[in-house]
Amino acid sequence: MPRTAPTSDFWNRLTALPGYSGLTQTAIAKKASRVTGEKIGQSGVQKWKAGTALPSLAKVQDLAKDAGVSIEYFFPTGIPKEPHDKQLDELIEVWQYLGADARNYILGAVKLERAMQFTGDNNKRSAYQRDLVRLTESQQRYTDSILERKK
Image (tube, rainbow, N blue to C red; front, side):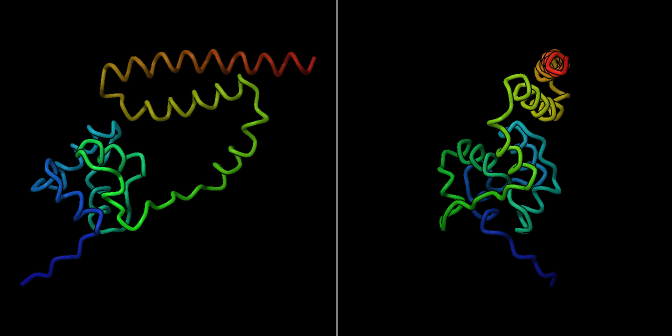
C-alpha cells in the first residue's frame, strides 16, 4: 500500500472550505489565480500542500475573502510576519529622501512588473500599455530633472 505524504495545516484548512473542498491541485491553482489576480502554478500549489511554501499574506487574504473567512482561519496560532529582504529594507530606508519623480518611477516599474503577469487579459494588457507610457514619461521627467540640477 503506497504511503500518502503528509499535508500542511494550511492545505488542510484551505481544502476544508466550501468552494475548495474536493478540487484537484490544478483546479485550486486556477481558482487561486482567478481570486488573487496573480498567476499561481500547480507547482506552487504543490508546495502549499507539502508545507514547503505558503502563499503571500496578500494571497491568503484574497483566498480568505473569497471563502468568507478571516485570515486568522488559516493561521490559528498567529499570522506569520513576512520577511523583508535587504533590498526592500534599503528601499524603505531611502524612500523618504526620494523626490516625487523618483517615487513615481519606482512605483511605475513595480506596477509594470506586476502587470506583466496579466498579459493574457485584454483589459490588463491595456492597463499595462498605459502604465508603460506613464513610466516612460516619468522616467524622462526624472532624467531631465537630474540633468537640470547638474547644469
